[in-house]
Amino acid sequence: VWNTYQPVAGEPLERELARQQVSELLRMIADITGRKREECGTEKDLEVRTWLYSIVFMSYADKNEWAEGLKAVDDAIWIMPKSSFRVLVKYRLLFKNKLG
Image (cartoon, rainbow, N blue to C red; front, side):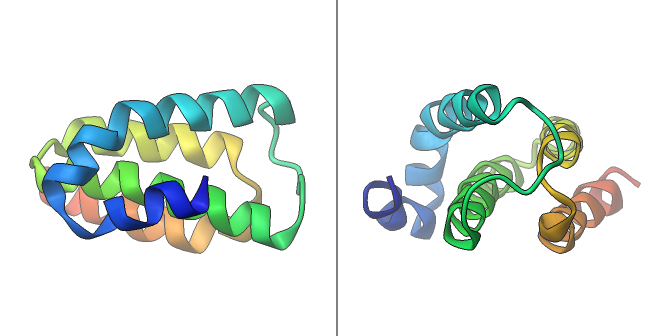
């Protein structure tokens, strides 16, 4: 998965095209891990999941879809373990700031 989506992170159009598939992949991972804030998997697994969420968040920011981006971040906060909150809060602050 990492090697497949790594080139996508660089360009806004590529992020937009991948957003639906990445979001679906993240939903599947959440279903497998039980949608709880527990530390599941290795540190590398969490790093990849955080990076995938970043692709989704950057895609919303690229399109100025601030409300949708905020909803995606809030959903991620309920699913991801607390150790990943620093990245999630960064995006949450971005979206909240743009919404006013």
